[in-house]
Length: 188
Figure (cartoon, rainbow, N blue to C red):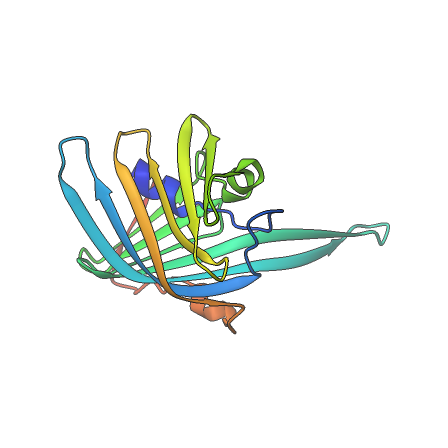
């Protein structure tokens, strides 16, 4: 579960070398290989939106705040939805009819990773963040294509993004995990 929490806590924003949009949607294929060579493959759709919020204090001073919201909709080999705002994570497992809620305290902060990423080729960047080495690959349009890393449990994680649509119109309701009333709820 720690791997899932880390993977889903991506906080995407802008970087000097790698530019990501305010929102995007894409299909993804994710493979996780453990240190014994066993591979689990997942696929689905990812929605991302960077929400801008403004708060006004008692003195009338406005402060802008940005938060990244993700929804991973897994379609194979299992059906689940994973929603995160980089602070809280909700996993709706339709096969188990179960909902899990977590607070994220050690997730991947892609914003920080992108800030320290070093270009190693025309499309590849590498970064070392919290003792983990990341390889980020962009496509010819400089859109996010792939992320690879070895997590703290020695699993090799590869996420490939396909049919990327930057700055697509994503309604906020699409980013919500719908929780059926009859599902069990587990707080982690």
